[in-house]
Length: 190
Image (cartoon, rainbow, N blue to C red; front, side, top):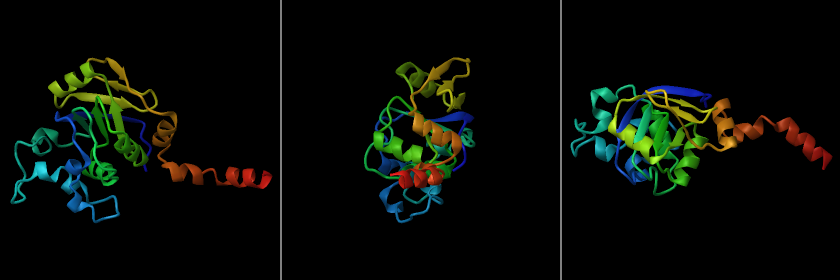
């Protein structure tokens, strides 16, 4: 993983509540164990019609969504099954963070383990972001802040270990492997 320190991007907005992991990446695409190639099927049932053509009215298909790295979603994003493919698909598509008032615990855990930032904000901040698609915002992992175009900074919760892993570009296993000598020394003392 690459270190995740800050991100400045325009937003793309999916205001729907209860976007579950099967909507993020439908089950028929879960035949892979690699993290690449899933972005093309992100929100497949919403992005494409029955013939596979992009739906012009879907947010990710609009020209102004190109290059956006931050998704703003309605309440309860990532609910449903434990599907690590969901953050993989979002990341492979080019998104690096999702902002919502509520993010499902299992999705949050899977996202953080894969270098994808789940940001929980208050209702007024979320309402403003949903009403202003394409807003240029900044995320600061170390400070735990989302900065709006006005310059107002909104704090978001991020557990200390998750923050450390994001800032250093390591997952849980990488964190442990980096402490191999310390672990061995501890085991010898015991």
